[in-house]
Image (cartoon, rainbow, N blue to C red):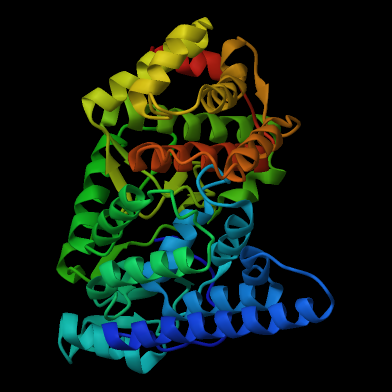
Length: 440
């Protein structure tokens, strides 16, 4: 879950599958009505518009984002996940629409919150706290976060899951996928089933706060000796499958480091990049949600606070080995080796057209170029991200490209891309070659 500042007004979460289906039906009907109205208007002016052009109007964009934001849960989370695609699977227009969902964060009203906590803790739960802030300080797609102080003096953060979210995951994903196909925003010949299945698995994992608590403990142990990171500690006496209680760590948004001295920004970015490498090649598990709100900074120590371990993906030894082979091939510049390694990972298939393979390989070689130089890479002044985005958008608009990389690879790239964006926001300078040499 990505923690965002809450909006001024709450909105009840639709809890039953029927109510969520009807709400999605309302979104679909609104979009269809917009398509008809826009189509009639353009035909009257002598134009023959294509369906995607009719769907992707500002009014329909507003209908889609507002509807998914109100539903929250898998409907909103899937939109956020797909919005990180950067044009390599979905159309750039849809990516732009879904990107607005990353900044939405409504919270449920107090009465609905009380119902959830009554079910999890019992009706006398308020007696366990000296203070409990009913208004959350953060909210996102799966739940919202409250600050509280226990009677024994612990300052804690309590993540509370929206009601009905877990039971609606599969139907939400299926319904959203049907909406995308119906509107023509996903090509008919493109098989996104593996991606959607992986999204369902990840969303079920994120909705299991018991599993997230275990992930938090695991990463806490892995990073216990690190001087660069600090993680909250699980409070087991208050945690359930739908409530996760953690120690509250006083911290500031990691973007606050943007005005810090250069060496502090460089150090933070170096730790973040190194964490991705350790997750991939050492830990065998990766926190795959790279949104900035999941990374904060402890002002007193300068250590980075990592939040949200619901979206943890296991990295198999074979996948790590495949990526190590690709890294070594990329650093040594062997094009044939790069092509074989990319084929092994699944960036393209044996049946993928040669010119598409060339485009995808060119993207990789562009991305890895900074790792080939034993000098600091300046994230703040480089146009690398713009070039990669343009190449990705070009692929996304090529409707003849039907190959979808494995979902595990896409989620991994989501994390890598997010850390690049964060390093760029910090205007950091990092010797990437020196970092990756440790993991060859």
